[in-house]
Length: 599
Ligand code: DCP
Ligand code: MG
Image (cartoon, rainbow, N blue to C red; front, top):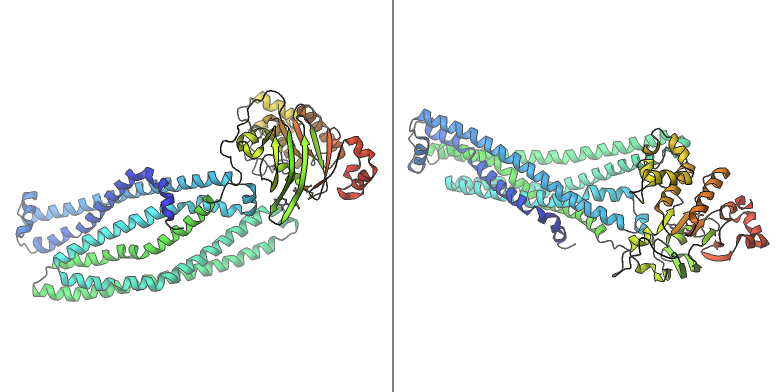
């Protein structure tokens, strides 16, 4: 984590010019702030007393072209106005550039993080909570903005204002400058004393807020279960209890902050009083003008702002660095499944027969120490259809998810047309595979866009034809806006079987030489299944197909059936052999995979 900010510089570098302008504006702003009380000083010291200007201010007479007091007054009033307007203008411009650049840097880092996250393996994502990852992309990526706009720039602003102010004060009266310095001392002390408490309480408060958000999100996601078990009351209780704790934590934070504010105000009051006393005596002695005392008092009040900023820098830095840690932790996460150097790019439109897949002594598991597939060997010819059968949890889904390299085997290798799939470019490998997942997840797009997800350039005719083939055209036309109906996040407006048919259409339209179907018809009734199977039958032609199913009807036409039990291939043969081999058939019938196999 050392020098973490060095790793973020490429998100800052493109904005060097704009940041330079910002620095310039900051310095100009600091100068103008220091000038602010001066017209007042001149009015008090020279206009109200009708004293002539001293030699070192004679240039004012030349500039204004007048030596009359009223003329000078008018000019000074005007310059106050000008100072205000210009200073405001600078602040506005600064805020505009600062927010623009800050957000650009944040989204630049957020974009890098999002892209990286998308490419991390499913194993990584299985172990992580989506909510937490979303927070890292959308919120924690603000660390780079926080660092530049919340640490470096304020540090510069504060130091510049403090230095200039102090120089002017010293020029006016060294004694009063020392008093101002003494009056400022309580501030760092207060901060040292109270910051840990404020930070701690803010942290607790944010924790509670996070829990509250998580509870609301979880309850809404699992709402069907909550409602089915009539547990709304209990969830409400939990929410209210958590809300109470959150409010309590919030009040504790506010108390700490108020203590701090009271402390700062007291210090300012004491400092102001001391300065008035000493300055008053000096004015009476004639060693200080009234106007200079006013300048001092104004600076004293203005001193606290930058000092406070400086004192908070460490905590701002700590917060930015904590967030950066959460971002970099993900960026450091190695892409387990990635292109090997010189990886083979498969031809987009291969000529001749493709799709020869062999598993060579493949073992695989999700967590170390718990192997799910043990020494699986299998040779599938191009165009062959393999049906996978086996009890739930046997490893069927795991076996087929090795083919598109959602995971890499622990041991052994998978070879596609003579090349180890680890030596094939991941994207081109996946372009050769059409998948219907066990959970037919649809994206929050229209029905048409969902079907065309793997081939956005497909024509409407092709899309409709595929939907017809997947037996999905009918219900899509019945949707309120037909093919243009937006489907909600989880495709909740469709039934399980409808989602499945849409997922099949999506896979079919992709038109890849390898087809993987994980229980594609489990949610369909016998009639719908027959129609889909018939369509699949046509589309399987010439494609190497893996189909996982629980029903014999689904796998009847497979070239070979493969029975998987506890991660091992326990039987391979044709449908006819399966029926003839009494023992095996009986075993299925007696409930290993349920009696659905009886048909
Ligand atoms: N498993 C795991 N982590 C995952 C997925 C599965 O630890 N992300 C485990 C659970 C099972 C084993 O792997 O013990 C095999 O799971 P599969 O999903 O491969 O099993 P099937 O697809 O055969 O089961 P089903 O018929 O229920 O889909
Ligand atoms: Mg499965």
